[in-house]
Image (cartoon, rainbow, N blue to C red; front, side, top):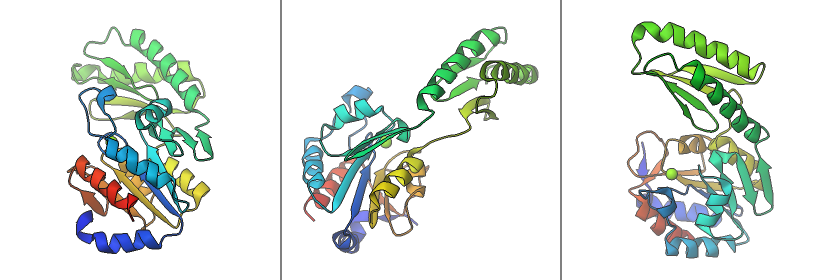
Length: 258
Ligand SMILES: [Mg+2]
C-alpha cells in the first residue's frame, strides 16, 4: 500500500528532525525538474536550487542528485556546489568528498560500440531487424522479421557476439521480439546508492524518484528509510508517493525549513 506523503507529514517530519545523519537523494528528470520535450529544456526550478543550497549547508545533512544523465550534464543542470552527484544511472559518482567510477564503464561502452559495428553488417541480410546502440547495452529488435527466420537470427547473433567479445563478460538475453546484449556485471542506481550509503553511513535516507530505473534505488533502501515515488507510475513501488513533480518542490521547501 502506497501512502500519500503529505498525509503523514507530521510523523515523517519528526523522524527527519531526529536523524543525526540524514542522506537526501533525488532523481533529476521528472523529480527535481519537470519533464521537458527536449532534455536540455528540463530546467531546475529556482525554488529547488535555493532549497538545495540551504540543505547542503546543514552539518547533519548530505544531499545528492542521482540521474541517468552523464555526470557533467547533471552538474550543469543542477548548478549547486557541495552535492553528491551521480550520473549515468550510478556509473559515476562525485562530490562532497566522494569519487567513484564504475571500473568497467568505459570498456563497456567501447565493447558495445564494437559489437554494434559487427552486428549491423552481419544482420543486414535478415529483413525486419534493427540494432539499437544504447551505449552501455544493445538491443536487436526483430518484431518485423518473419517468424521462421528467428532461429537464424539467434545463431548469427550468438556467433557474432562470441567472435567480437571473445571471453568478455556479456550476456545475450531474449525479450519480447528483442534480443538484449548486456554486460553480465550490471551496475544501477540501487548499487550506486548502496555505495553512497556505505561511505556516508546515514542514520536515515530519503530517496525521491519517478521512473522505472528508480525502482532499483527504492530497493537499495532499508525498511525504515523513506522511499517516495513521484507521479502515477505503476512500475515503481515505494511506500510513499507524491502526486506530481510540483509536489517535489513543496517537499524540498519543507525539508529546507525543518
Ligand atoms: Mg526521472
